[in-house]
Image (cartoon, rainbow, N blue to C red; front, side, top):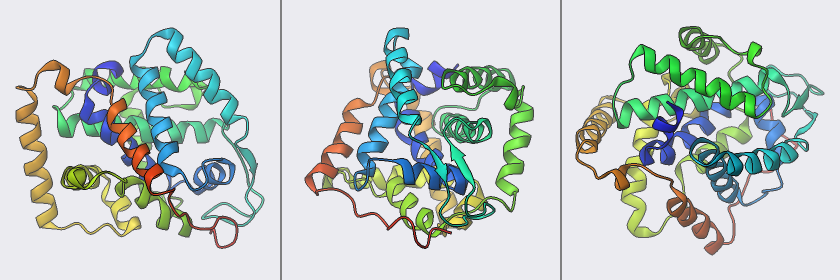
Length: 280
């Protein structure tokens, strides 16, 4: 099921930005990652690298996936430390690690919910059995990164209830850095002028699938007009999807990701807010 879902180009192009936005609302994960990254002023390069790695794990051979997983494991060894200042519900000095089981579950959760949401918006609704099969595949995906299975909800209905609780929790929090930076990386891709109309449509789909509370936290405007346009756009895509040739609708998105990375190179990087002071 995971290969079926992530093999759709529309899913592969959009779920990562949605997952990034929601994921940024766990301040311990977000701040720890930003303090540990070497990407600096090249966030789109990092986004592209992550997107390609995940597509390789979902869609590539076992050998390709194993190489990616070994590389990611080594990168995650650097993601550990303590917060210099309080961030949301986390006090100054709170420790973070890429191998913290609860933080690994949160990272998996935003990927899992976003993959499902994009498939159902752009392709078709999933049955309860398909959602269950997809969740089992995501559990395996998490295990490949070292997440203990027993930390995660065992079934899709349990996951759905757990995730809804996290979204509603007062612990969901965007630091000033996340408020300023996550929407830039999600919505302001450095694409050529001719691709900007398509980017605007993609951004509308991402915004429309976000939980309302996430839109509220990031201050994303959303009203009846946006909702109607979103519904019309996704309905049209679902209808057209049935007529698309297999090679058009399914496959990897490397060439699209490369356009984003090339655009960032051309403009010499992306200004980022200062980390350290003022994170909470």
